[in-house]
Amino acid sequence: MLPQLILRTLRTADPKCIGKFLWNFGVKGMLSVERFKARLRRGEYFPPFLYVSIINSCNLRCQGCWVDVEAERATLDLDAMNRLITDAKAHGNTFFGLLGGEPFMHPELMDILAAHPDCYFQVFTNGQFITEKVANRLRELGNATPLISIEGRDLVSDERRGKKDVLNKTMRGLENALKARLLVGVATSVCQTNIADLCTESWLQELIDRGVHYVWYHTYRPVGPKMNAQLALTPAQLVQVRRFVVEMRAKMPIAMIDAYYGHDGKALCPMSTGISHHVSPYGDIEPCPIIQFAKETVRDERGIFETIRSSEFIRDFREISAQATRGCVVLERPDLVKSLVEKHGARDTTARGTAMAELEAMAPRFSQWLPGEEIPEKHWMYRLAKKYWFNDFGAYAKADHDATARDKAAALVKAGTPEPRETANV
Image (cartoon, rainbow, N blue to C red; front, side, top):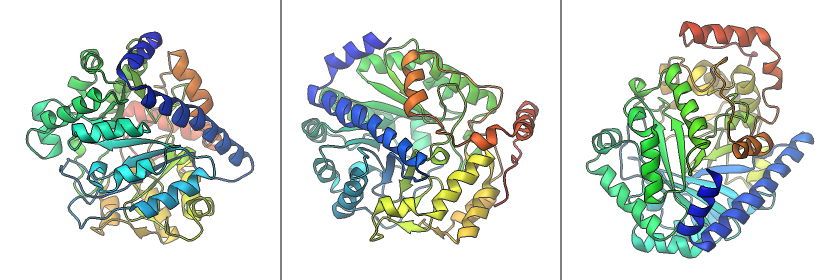
């Protein structure tokens, strides 16, 4: 699998894109994680990876979207991004995920990428704004990879994304990116309407035949103003997706990302482990993209490093969430999220101003933490990378020793009852 993937990448991607990926993301990314681990040993904290929603606007209207895509446009401009990235770089960070809305609608996106040739950017996009000109400019820069969202075949894509002819328009962007010899990924939010079509070996083979270099499967999370609980996966389907990813990683010559499991198959949450946090289009520093509450902003004169490092709100979310679950605290314990927000007097960071009402309307449900259903990594490369550079960093040490809570959670899974799990008092 690995030799084929390497040879295929060397044949299909521009050398500059490969070089920037290997150095800015690979070598410097590992060093960034090592600096993160050193900070933890000193009792300090700043995440090695940051995800930044640079714009709220989008041309699509996806089911279950939590972003205020129809509100007045808000962006993090070039100056704000330069301050954020420069401060983070001073502390070892070189990787940034750029989200939206639709990032390619940001008028200064290319300027942001060009201003930081020593960093690597993953741009989460529907692909419809990747013209030949845009793709060629990305190749010239070499330091960004488009991660193009595909949510199903023709009819499912239109239904999920609220427009017509979505798949064809997205595939044109994908082809432009591949023709320009970029490193290209495809992301899928796996749900009831696409699991049968896209969690298959034949779909992966189709992507490989097109020239796609990596995929990212993440599971649909019913949150936001128009949450669609009917799309959420069952516990059995969550295990199915995990098993599919692990088996295909050891078989297919395409890289496969996941952010919710360690090398031993134990669930984790990037927010709880502290490996990443989120910045909104308004500059608010949030625990993660679906927790739309904040106390601090990137416009604080202290800079993002000191602001996050000293945030009691972010610290409490990390530590108390890790005590409650190895999964997603928003899905499993919306009551706990509400308690933390109220404890710190955090503000609603949405334009719609209904984040608390949405939280109160949520019923607890399962996420990726399914005790007794752990599926360890099979391929040595993923097992090694996760063991040393993407793991739980000891975040769950206290909770893992609580056998009573763990056994109760396992019993709930077997019973199929998504009830809240025990946690420390807020």
